[in-house]
Length: 130
Image (cartoon, rainbow, N blue to C red; front, side, top):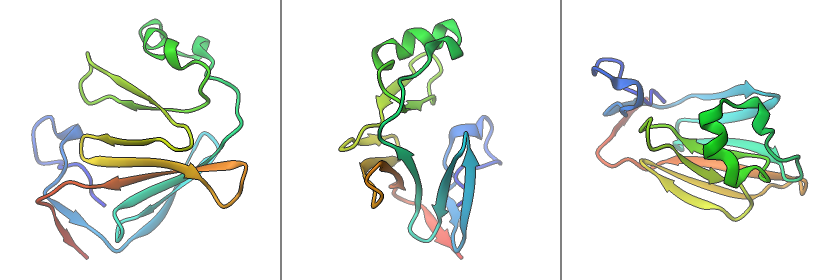
């Protein structure tokens, strides 16, 4: 899925009106593997349910302020779209968020010690092509 439109100025976070589909791929980050399925417009990652809290010492001072209420969570979602109004959401089993053009759900995975985080693109007015 080509999420962002490279032809628009300041398009780093603007969704492209024409999306390509028909691919399934994996992405790895920090030891976790995500799956992207452009046909179903989803990205999925399995994360451990039991994990240590965030180590705020790993973050800059501004981020520490943002994360102070979430230090006990092992994982968070951060909406960085508006730089001076960053929103932080805890990634816990049962969470269900709509963040701009995405619906994010967190549920218990088939492997009981893991949670499945699914990001579904819900933008209206997009054209999907193979």
